[in-house]
Image 1 (spheres, rainbow, N blue to C red):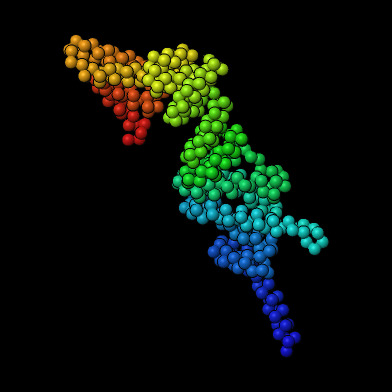
Image 2 (image 1 turned 90 degrees about the vertical axis):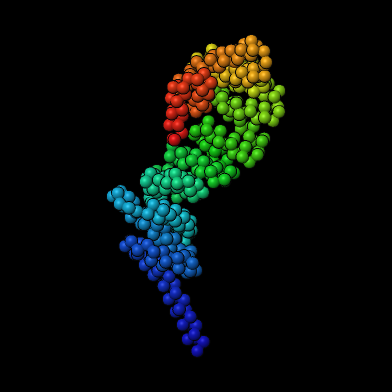
Length: 410
């Protein structure tokens, strides 16, 4: 009796193993015929059964299901038919995950110590198509990013960015090269992470973009912004300084560094840092522009104007310097007119009022020049609008108001 029971147990065990293997075959067959739901149901059973869970074939078929579904939906897309974009994207991500596991298992030596990874070539070809054909992973990432599904976009990007370094890809010929496509996804993945509140992940990606020399200026700017969000003052300042050293003509870094010093009541440090920059390279117009901004903030109007003039001398097409000097004069004039309201003597009042209005009139050609050089900068337009209002230039005021509204999409 014991022999019979033992024999039956062995038979049942063998039957169970054959049953799971049959499920793998049926799953592949269903995938080929387009019945993806049935295929997934069958393969899930095999993936969790001890008899088939460690088989490279099981995981290969699991990935094959996603590959076939993606192929079918891709054909629909090419035929301009309606298709489920999310299902297509998820099928690719699912397929890649399963193929990675299948490749790991396929690299396991057999009893004779030989590696027979018979699925690797097919899996490599599929993954390369996902990566290199822009209608696949890149489009899925871009759609999620555009739809502001930032966490999901970040996750897809991470899968895409991992592909060139996969062992099966590294050992293939030709390898996938990290080109513009890779660096573009890496950069925008950083933006997606930042928008999703994943600041440490964003920091890591922006650092990689900097190291890869892709969009370095904006990557430094974004990196400093992430440190600022995390209130990591030390790294915020260090990043601004490094960005300034690498890109001295980009006044953004210097201006934000000076802002930090000023708003943290470190005016001496601000002036010293800027003066040192000017001493090292006195022909950089941006330095004088920032010095003008700093002196203006410290209420040193005469010094501010001198520095704006120097910036314009060095670069006659420097819109920011014209705007800075123009707004400086406007503020001086508006302040004098406001203070004149307290003067009781009529002659003194008129003299002060005329002086203020004259300064505002002097600001007009400067602000118009700034707008002429850069008509897309809303700050310049808004400041010029103020001058038109104060000088009662109604037609010009209405004209620039329309332009501002157009730029704002109103």
